[in-house]
Amino acid sequence: AIPAEVLRQRPDVRAAEMAWAAQIAKTKEARAEMKPKFSILGVLGLAALSGGLFSAGSHAFGIMPQVSYPLFNGGALKRNVRVQSEKEKEMQSAYENTVLKAAGEVRSAMTAISQDKIRKDSLEQGRNKAKEALDLAQNQFTYGLSDYMGVLDAERHYLSLDQNYTLSKGKELTDMVSLFKALGGGWKPLDEGLEKDRK
Figure: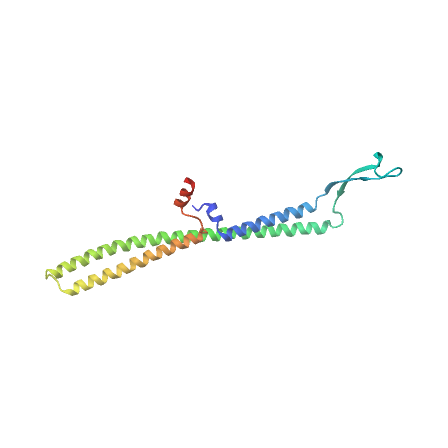
C-alpha cells in the first residue's frame, strides 16, 4: 500500500540507490577495460624533401588505425571485474535492506496511528458517557436526591477519562509526525501544489 516513489524521497533510500547506481557504473567500466579498444590517429602537417616548405607539394597527411588489447594484465582486469561485481551485489543488498527498513518504519507508524485512533474513539465515547453521568449526578444533588459524594465520584471519573482522551489525541499526532518522518517528509501540502499549478 506504500507507493515506491514515496519511499524513494527518503534520504537514506536515495543515498543507497545512488551508491548502488555508482557501483553498477564502476562494474561496467571494469568490464569495458577487458575489451579491445579501436582508435584512428590522424596526422596533418608539412613535409618538404625538395623545394620550399610552403610549396604546393609539401603538404602531408596520414591516417593510422590503432588497436589495443590488454594481453599482459588480463588476470588483474578479471580480478577487478570480480571485485566490482561483488561490490555491486553488496550495494544492491544494502539498498534492498534500506528499502525494507523504510517500509517497516512506515508500516509501524501507520499501524500505530490506526490503533491510536481506535483507542481515542473509544475514550471519546467513554468520556461522553462520563459527562452525562456527571450531569445526572449534579442534577440529583441539586434536587436533593443524593449527596455530594456521588458528584465527586462522577467528576473524578470524567476528569480521568478526559485526561486519557487528551493524551490519546497527543499520541495520535505524535504518530502522524513519525509517519511523516518515515515517508521522508519535506514535500508541500497538496493545496499549495494546486495553487502553484493554477498560477
